[in-house]
Length: 248
Picture 1: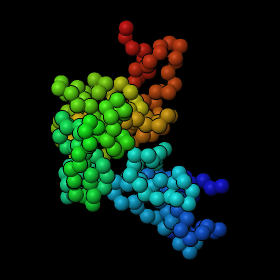
Picture 2: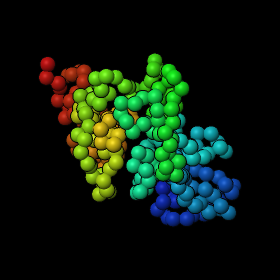
Picture 3: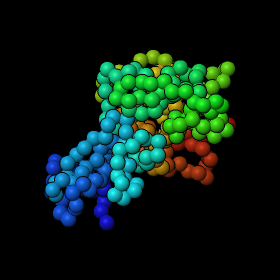
């Protein structure tokens, strides 16, 4: 047995390091970055990045590989490489399958390949679901899927709507798809697709979203959400962000 996080952290801190008893070609994940992994070559572990937009899947032994993110469980490996400047602005990443750039269109999607966007139709009567990366029947749509309607209700989730303005990320770069914290749920956050369409995401159990770094962290490391998991359930069923009880 081996511990992915322990081995990976040693690789990060010490650079290339020799590993004994590991076959050539053995691959294991980075401890913090979901699209980064290490591969053993002649006893030396070398860091490798997946193609932008893909994530490293090690769920099947001896079949570890970079794949589209729809079925990859990153766990606490929350980091990914930054989007490449200059690619088609409709692509969230250089490679991947994404919502169509018109928020009122549900029966098309974008297939981005090496930074080029290709418009793809769904066979009628199917619509696109970004969570699974494919076209499904409307009755099968996930919570993360775009829902088209005449009132554009999909532009608001849990009372949140995208500001529609430019936003600068933690790295000081302009974000094509700005990220915002949930107004009342420390575990959740929103990605605004091209600044207009909100998509809700959530941190793993035990973690909360840090708006400053735009990463999921332990609750005690995020001051405004430090008590998120320690509210007194006997005093109120659903605490506010600051752990006070909602006003009735």
